[in-house]
Each structure stands twice: as C-alpha cells, then as structure tokens.
Length: 380
Ligand SMILES: [Zn+2]
Image (spheres, rainbow, N blue to C red):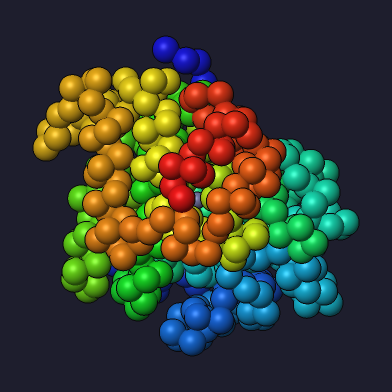
C-alpha cells in the first residue's frame, strides 16, 4: 500500500439546522471582528442576512463583502482585500458555493501576506499564517470547505490557479443541508456533478492513497445514490444531506489525491467559452473514464464495488462511464462540446492549454496535448 502523511485540518460540524450554531462556533474560535464573504445569490436567498444576525447576536462585528462573480479572479480578490484592509478583521467566514469559499480564501492570502494572489500559486508560500476561517457551503459541489487551496482565476488569462497553504484550510466547516434547499435546479445539477467528478477523479490519480480512497469511495456511494433524488425532490432532506456529505468527502479526497484529466480539459473551456465548470465536466468525464480505462480499470472497479453494483474488472470503465452519462442526463447536462459552440478547429489550441494544467499531471494515464485532443474529439 502507498504510504501517506495526512491530517484533517478542519473540524466538521454537520446537521440540519446547524447554521444556528454559527455565532457560538465563531466565539469559540475567538472571532471579534469578521469579514463575511458571500456571493450575490446567497445574499438574495437571505442566508447572508441570517449569518450576519447570528454573528452579531454572538457579539461579533460583521462586514459583508459580496462584490465578486461566479468564477472569482485575482481582480475580485484584490477588491476584497481593499474592502477588508481598513476594517482590521481578525477572522473570515465564507458562505456560499465554491466561488464564495475560494474568494474568501483568496482574500485571506493577500490580506495577511500582501502581494497578489498569483504569488501563492502552488503550496505553502504564505510566510504568515492566514486568519482563522469558518466555511459554510450552500451548495453540494466543490467541497472547497474541506481544502487548503483557493482556486482563483488569473484576471488577465482567465486560467485557474490553485493557491494552497496549510493555514488556508477552514478551522471549521459548518455543513447545514438545509442551506442547499433553495439552490435552483441547474445549480444543484452542476454543483452535484462537480462533486461526482471529484469522487471519480480522486479515486484513480497517481497520488491516491488508502486514506483518499476511503473518502472517494464513500463520496461516490453517497453522491451516485442521491443525485437523481435531489433533482426529483428538492426538499428531500436525507438526499440533500447525502449530497452535501458526499461533496465534502470528495473535497477531503482532493486534498490528498488531487484531480485528473477531466479537470485539466474543463479549465480551458471555462476560460475561453465561459462554460460552467459542472457542465464542462459533464461533457468530458465519461470520455475521460473511457480514455483512462487501460490505466485505471481496477480502481474504477473498486469504486463501483458497492453492494448494489458489482462490475467485472474488465468492464468497469465502460459501466462507470455509462452511469456517469445517466447522471449527466438526469441533470439536463448531457451535451456535446459542439452544442456549446466549440468548433473542431479550436481543439488543438484547447488541448495545448489543457496539457499545461497542473491537475493533469496526476491523471493515471500520462496526459499530454495529444491525449487532451483525443478526449476533446471524443466529446465534440
Ligand atoms: Zn471541480
């Protein structure tokens, strides 16, 4: 077995209605003056107002920052730093989908260590520890609340940068499935598919360990059984809870195992065509699973090996690819690249960009521009 050295850095508080505990948890961590980073949708849904009320009732001064978009970039992080600097906050609360949590972490880097977020690309480049943070996800998707990386796009190139540091991990992840009930159907589908892709990719990377496998496999089981249910019955509390835990577990798996070719191929599509991350993954993931078959068949078989589904090893990749296609269809995400305006002539350029993605280096089958081109062609 592969050796590993891993510590869960984030305390996890999970349960329906657990948002009520936000004020007390923040007090426990010694928060006095906090920056609440919440996207516009979360403000509109009333969750940000509720969080402010809970924090202020606990005696914590709270300033709300919401001036950023769906794929936070270095300029938005800089706007957040300028907003937060005069407030002299001692802590951060990230509330929302992955964009809120990544933006919160990005602001935390530049507020505590100066410079621009691009300076922290890679891992462990913060000289001063970041401010303590609580992460409260309102979608079941990125699992960003489980990770010590901020994923922020370069404002000039739109390419995603992963900026990590041990102290960037949230001190507490507060998982209240009730917060996900209000997400529109397409958000539930795209965020949920992102989590599915995290479970599938982390289960086969070259960095996977027995510990990350535990999280990948449990995540897949929870997500693949609950994905269709939350789309059919948005207020099904058990299914919502399964999605949120599954997304969190997949996030824990990423922290150790990283990701693979589907994410490497998805990033240039988001940068050039503004294709939503979850939709890009839904288009690509079945083709990546088939492309990886020779290198990852046993690991795909292990992923499928739940009591409900047993696949013979040699068929595992195809069985998994079809199951993933079914999930994409259920979410209204079953598309081809050409449906979203991508032309064949653009593929070599996209493939060259995909080959430069750090995340592709962890794919089980060695991944380069030629491989990326094969995957894009299959998905066209
Ligand atoms: Zn993702």
